[in-house]
Length: 272
Image (cartoon, rainbow, N blue to C red; front, side, top):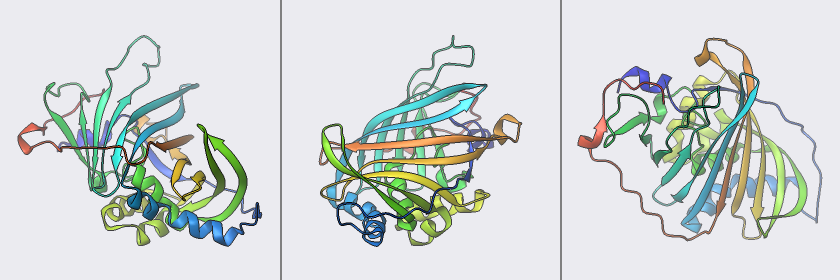
């Protein structure tokens, strides 16, 4: 894979961390310690749930304008595979539309179709997630749903915000802080390498989050707030990036067939 691929992904960001309040509260009889344990086990609950439909959003400010990369699809938590259709924002001038990018999420790899100039229409681009400086937490335009849950294995400083309804489902809203390095050390084998790469590439490991769990302990929504270095644009400045993953329709069938080696493009990839 040419080095141009890692440098020209859909978002092209290097995550460096964020802060969060250490407030602790008790709501509806649930202590903070219980909340931490529930959040740290959220990834295991998803695996037991089998699969779900997914919505993703990565939001950032660029050129004084707030832009969002949105995706939707499905994820198999047992096989650790997913398929998303990701819609890129317009160009800065607001005149150029991008065709949706199909992304296949797999253990250690991200496959993208209709991504980048110079790539034949029938070929896929493969990215080794352990070789991306943020472990592909946001650079592909979406956070892998299982990885988003695995980040909660290092949840701490948790506040129980309260009971709410999310798209008609009763959920409990939590807010807290997680640590990428700690999460990498205790993550599931299929996620460990990507988070380990992120831990090496991040200047700081702290990431603030809001998580919403339903009555069965299933993660319905998770929002991570990263502070990023915009080094890919040459500015070296910092900006806020929010990655949101929503899960619904648990048990829905999800089939993901990975590309054959002959279907993977290995040349230089241009900008999308």
